[in-house]
Image 1: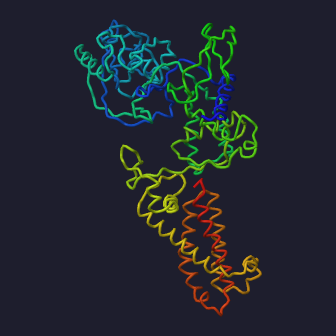
Image 2: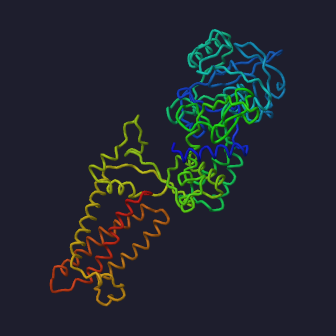
Image 3: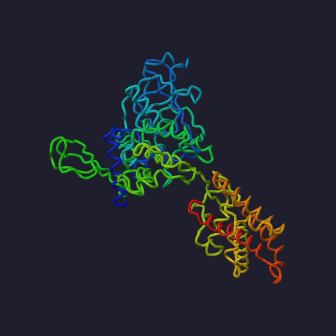
Length: 549
């Protein structure tokens, strides 16, 4: 919400609006009845729930025949405006174009043919309620059907049937089922398990709703983002997560960016109270661009938080101004993030950066896993299985916590938080500390000029064990550099662990102790080895403390 970032948000909104990529329209959106706001497709999490499938008979007008539809939401039938069948379904071909009677409402509705109907599912007949289902909404637009809302703005039953007005949806469901039984049109009720959309913040069941909202037209914005990864301008590590990225973009829908919450960037659209013109600008206009009136009122909605987060790679560097930070650091090298927000954040940063700057925002997208509990469950407040990092750090130290999370991991895979790994990590941290202390203690009287000589100048003076440890160190440095470049952090850490614990501490230090403690024997070569090994030891702390790990 800083001034600079706010300016970036408003600038992008206006640029996209002027280009025709942001528009306001009446569309079907996801609505959270608990938070009383629209949400995007990415905020709707699908979970399986047990429910019922109610089979209801609709009488064909003028014939002694019935169409049986199966629905998980009988309360929405009050807003049915058609019954659909597949155009190639031989069972119902002769009924297409005729009408049937909607029970309870006792009105005639058309029988239509549409390819979205699955012939094999249920009876092959689908009731169409355009106001309360995304597929039905599209069918309603295609067949020019009436759109009738069943619920009011508080998601209580409206006044289509006076006796149900103001009743909770689920209570109304019971009453409607009882009415259907009374009318003799309820064929059967069967158990059914299906996926239900939940708001990822509050867990409330998401309701489809037709509403006036602001949208970003995504088709043209998605194409450059797809091309950037396909051509290798940006790569995913591991590569398998490209599928998640492409799947989202290939099936992209226009992005609903308006929210009915009080916290956030307010939409920079100003309505003229005189002529109704929408004026979009970074700052409030003094007068309407159409009629000249100064009676303007700003849209009360706020922007989806991901709208501003999508600008992060360049807005934080001072864009839209040509700052030194922006010219120096954009585009960035590596984004480190979890696989669960590829479509929330990564996709949106990609198309936003390409649209606003013409550049990809980062060259590499390194995907890490999620830290889970010892049973493999996601940590959550409801389960009470979370940990407080500060308590862990207080007991084991920050380095031990970092080590335990990196050890044994591979890119993109979840990791289990195991207390025993903390013990092992703590032991290793102590080992590193003691080894470093021992090395420094034995370097106190060393000649700096001698220690900084190139290795080839003192090679004849090195003993076998000195050459061995320096060779091991050089091999380790090369391999770890490759591992780090390939984001194989767990592998790199395992090699460092093996070198320090097994080779340097357990073998080399023990071998050279007799030479160190022999005052008559030169220890310069040993100290040369110590100095080189100490560099890799201190590098471990640098590696562990890097923010991107």
